Image (cartoon, rainbow, N blue to C red; front, side):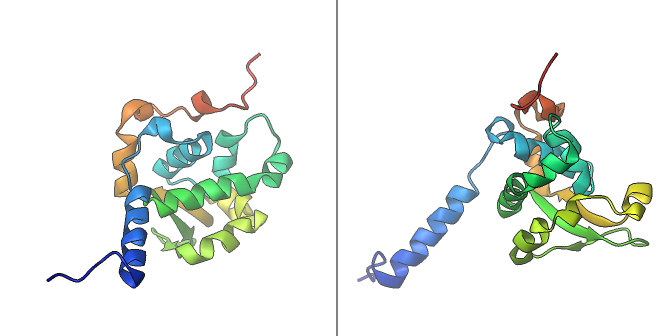
Length: 161
């Protein structure tokens, strides 16, 4: 006779697995928020984190963007959790960067300095935090309209004159 798997610790394990399956459910480009689309486009470009601000809230100056940057940070952590992007710390003189551990991301992204270019980062684009699309993220970007990314098309804040 098989053990009952729906009680106690087994039920918790099953619930945890089901939650993970929901997180990894197939998503399409159109299901992403404006913030997530901006981050995905910038991740495809291996952009430094400050570069994402220029695609995100074009209706705001940098100071106002930084005041709301927690919204973008939350979206970035969500994309990392879904396995679509990685955040890497780029160091001058190296071709790749060290992946920032998921557990460190909230604290790292809360520092507004990582959302601003250093002098070297601005000049050479080789200093700071970089976002990179993963293989799973590349699959997502092959769906729907993402072939021609236009983060402004999803921008609810864009003022067209």
